[in-house]
Image (cartoon, rainbow, N blue to C red):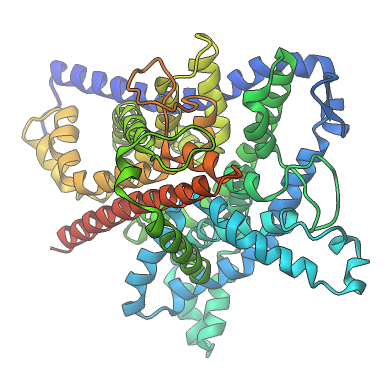
Length: 581
């Protein structure tokens, strides 16, 4: 019989559980803090307008009248249209990759899908403005007259509008929907297919049996994509037309909740105006929270029945997103074509020129991006890793289940909502945009990714390593941080790289936190330039030279993503070889 642990060891183990539990609690506090901060700062609007805020259509900041119905309509309309377009393609991709794909194609397709999932929203928006919108405009121009009489296709051929926004969203949500659907199908017990074959079913009939078994989880995957579409900001802002009018026409310029926040937040010159915008963010937060929570519950209802040996790390579910290869090729083609011809040494070494002057570069924005990533990493990596250690060590506890579920839901919260939370936390109290506020916003986005990745990678480490360390007299803390974490470190680093790839392309949260700066700055308490915000600023400008530099900036962003993805792939393959041996 093993000797019971001594009193000092029990005290150490208790301290370890409380210490790691505190960092896990921070994940729950973060979600609660977002909800409270949004409610607190939107209360003036809630008190003044009540439910009329959501039922009226007049949005007049000058008169102090705010009705958000056009933004709710535009958000739901664009998201639903995107899901109608994307769901059949996403499910087809999930079925192909999980059931039909040859082994030789699986690896290259997986790598391509990683890039598609990681392409920054601002790059999609840039491609949408200069490539997709002209195509949509030609489609609208050549629409037959009899179709234009139908309300769905009425209106002038602007190019920008609901159709362009829905198409962009469809391309962007396909990776998320298909990746989760693929994991659901992989979680279906093999006995379901074997039973179908035993009864004489064809391969397609066996696949249909697996789909029927996993239909609840597949519905969760579709809802997860729907939540992503609702919260998308920058790409939609750049192509939807930003017109607060309700229309059934796909050709009409309209607006969304996230887009109005991005466009008007920095222009809010009264407390009521600012409060109304934050109330929109509050409702956006609640909607995405409910959708993500419901989708996670549906997915868990299927995947929890899978055997432990069939599970894959969360980083694979996030990084091995499925592909829609045609848009991937088109986006890459235009970014590389336009970006390569615009890149030069001055782009990396010179400051931006004043408005109207040609030349200059984005040296300050490149440096600022790295500076923001460093701040975010300092904030997120310790919290995420230690919280992940807690979930791995005490995963069956009810509190661990709550933290795990909260982290999954937090990962689906729109980045613009997290940016407004950081604004209330680090900008409003000091009345100043700052690099610290931007770094905090990006760090908050990294925490749930690192938390869940760390947990899943630690769960893949053979438990005999922990048991051996404990048998030799090690405390639980020493076994976890001295044995388990080093064994899983390559995979944990992969999760960190994927988190960095995500935040490197974020724009929306930086609009309200770090803002922008035409000069070099490394001060934590001052605004700082970032590559994504600079690309956005240049893309919506009327100057051809700024458009050229926007393409160059987009190419650099894609290069960042490509580098992080390659490193993550190399580390993941090394980890897989280690487990096979």
